[in-house]
Length: 110
Length: 110
DNA sequence: TCATTATTTGGTAATATCGCCAAATTGCCA
DNA sequence: TGGCAATTTGGCGATATTACCAAATAATGA
Image: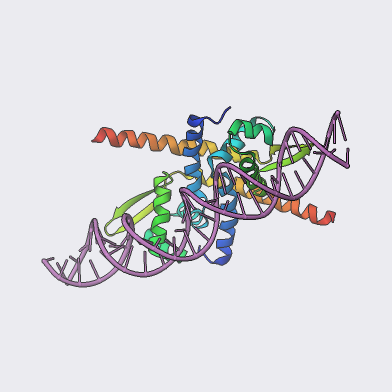
């Protein structure tokens, strides 16, 4: 397959969604939302960053289509909309385990 | 769960692996390697960027533990080491489909 | 050994991301 | 209506990412 501009655009669209997950704080948010919905104020409390920072992370996840917001009075509650995203964690952990195992092997070989 | 520094480090390590996937060219490489191993020269030809650029993308995937390189003479062949990474695509496509469906619904509602 | 090919590494300019502060917006209730 | 709390938006400086060019490295064969 060639990397022509249509192909490039297709991969760019997918990359945008993956990129939304590619940040420690946003991974934490997804993990947290997999257990329960949370309002911005709760997430901010848990994360310990400025509210505006948390709000922007949520906007990135929302615009990627990964989470959903809904307003209850003055609060905004966020929900994990695409739980299949959690499957990322399993593979990432496999990668980490394998890397750790190989590094051990490399060390003992010296 | 709180976002203390140990937790933060754990999520940062995972984010690093996901970030390695979060680029159109690198997604393309992973997709291509899922079909067959390729040398840098072939990938460069397919992608149509400078060799040094491709080499750096490969270094990112390699240091994340996603691909593996091995030298055959003057060429370096890359292999997909963690095929579970391909599962990302399925979920990403689900996200895209759902987003598309919702946008249609929103349009027709106007 | 010398030239050639494949790949990596160093450097740099352009661009994107991130986190905070300040200000704007929204909904609630006195 | 006025004020307060929750959230988002705008803006900015600091940092990271990306792509290219040039130069270094490595393996091959003449």
